[in-house]
Length: 113
Image (cartoon, rainbow, N blue to C red; front, side, top):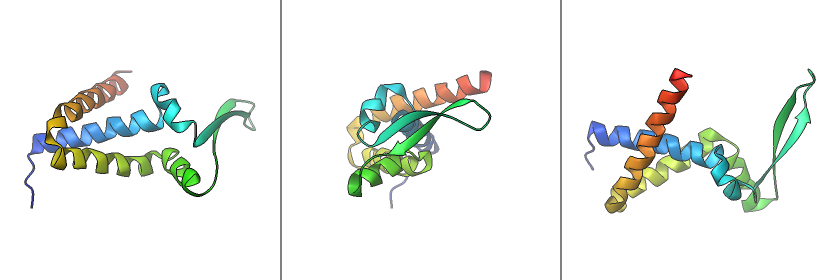
């Protein structure tokens, strides 16, 4: 079995966290979500404007939309991607490190605000 150090595990966890957030929430990746999801403004019973996510299409398109609308589901796939990169494409470790640093920075920012 593969051995993994604690620091590499921390990098994988943070990289997976950041990749998940990037795919599910960040504005820069709306072009990925747009074919599968539609965000509609609706008024809730208290009169507040909220965003409602509607999944588009059927079949694979619907399934991908379902995955992208759920951060837990996307997190599993993001973890698969990060671990696969770590194990099978090791020269891309700097990319994982970049995502990990960005993930750690996001956590620090949330803690401070």
